Amino acid sequence: MTAITYELVKKDAATGARAGIIHTPHGSFPTPIFMPVGTQASVKGVSPDELKDLGAGIILSNTYHLFLRPGMDLVREAGGLHKFMHWDRAILTDSGGFQVFSLGDLRKITEEGVTFRSHIDGSKKFLSPEVSMDVQMALGSDIVMAFDECVPYPADFQYAKQSTERTLRWLKRCKQAMTAPNQGLFGIVQGGMHKELREWSARETVALDLPGYAVGGLSVGEPKELMYEMLEYSTSLLPENKPRYLMGVGTPDCLVEGVQRGIDMFDCVYPTRVARNGMAMTWTGRLVMKNAQFTHDHHVLEEGCGCYACRNGYTRAYIRHLVRAGEIFGLRLLSLHNLWFLQEFMRRMRQAILEDRFGAFREEFFAHYVMHGKQ
Ligand SMILES: [Zn+2]
Image (cartoon, rainbow, N blue to C red; front, side, top):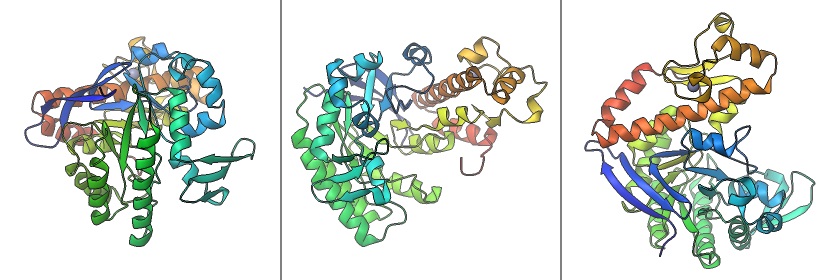
């Protein structure tokens, strides 16, 4: 009995895009899917009921942050993360690897694990494959990510090779340490921008027969074309009967490109972060609400949008006013809109796959969508 299973419903005839269903102990959800990020056991400013209202079936939370505060003992005492944060649908937790490796001079890496200073109080902490699994078992997330190093960009072949090999050794330790039967461990394919290493990493990771696989080490500063090339190559090496997760990607153009290459799951802080910067996501690109062009604009953020803000008629002029006045409600309306937008975006992609017209969806999307720099 595996905690996490994937059901392939339909493959687009012309591309690698696929529609499926992922089953977890906390419910099933359709794929492709976007997971809102609740870093500190909260999707910033949005309640669990609101997340359900916009159709989220799974959210992501961060092991690193919860490990430091409030700590795994407190979450275990509360009965796990689902109970602690009042969310009864699925949760994926990352491993903390990405955050500790990003600490630069504040951390020391050995084969055993990573010693680092807490960014909160400066105290000395230690994360390893075993500790990360312990914390994620205390959190009780449905999907558990392996403790790995996200190879930075650029990285020369030798560095990427050593890092990718260590990630595999650590994955084997994670598999050994993850003993909770109701949680599923996903392995992460690394290898930097080197196809030879990607191939080795995918082969060795898949050989461990895990319930799902992530493609890691992408969207780390490399040109998008290179990212897509590495992504396509990596997913071509993954089995069809398991979910595939592209970590840390959430701009609409990248979601379309990822789905086209056979990715099922995505996460990113993008929709809530840009909302807090006063921006709305739409089918034609981003709206910067502070701009004077919205002063007298008494239309909703996007015509036909089913989010709380648009559904109830909150206007661009009003939201612009709230953003300029620094009112929290304005940022909440934008967060609800952006999160809805991405859930709806994924739903429409899935529908297009089911109807064998993903290629047409993609063309139409890029014909209307205006990119804003690096996004
Ligand atoms: Zn809306």
